[in-house]
Image (cartoon, rainbow over all chains, first blue to last red; front, side):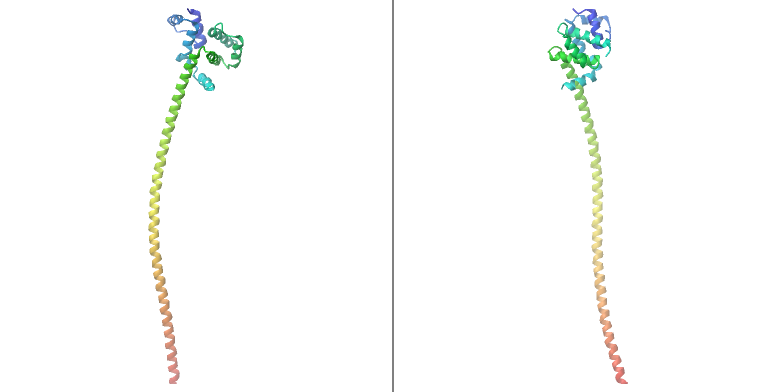
Length: 63
Length: 158
């Protein structure tokens, strides 16, 4: 199980903000691993919208 | 980059790669990244090439492709609209030019007819003048002969 601290840390490291509520933290803690929580955040619309230009630049360079 | 950014990079690297992360890999990524945000994307791309986080990269690619397709589609539609407007303007100008050309051709045609008619009249007048000159010459010759006869008769009577 993922710890509360890990969820909070991932929020800060990936989404650059604290989690909005304890309910959200508890929901994320149910994930089977830290990697799964990170992947959920990385594939979220929030992450994409906040990093849209950067992702466009990187993915265009890769193609 | 700031120390805080370095710390964040290191921590994210540890969390995402757990025990699989190598220090040289982290160093290489840190050197390539222009910012912490840049590092995050580079890290996932790097992990995706190893198999892990591949679905994150695929998700980003789909979203970027959707944006680009949307933009390209909108740009294409806009270009088509602009082209349609230009085409309509050109067609309108073409119709005006065509009408003007037809009108000018008719005017030229009318002028040519009038010119032909005038040329014919000029020829008639020239012919008439020539005829009059001929008659005048004949009359002058007859008058001269008559004068010579008259003067001959006058000399004989004296």
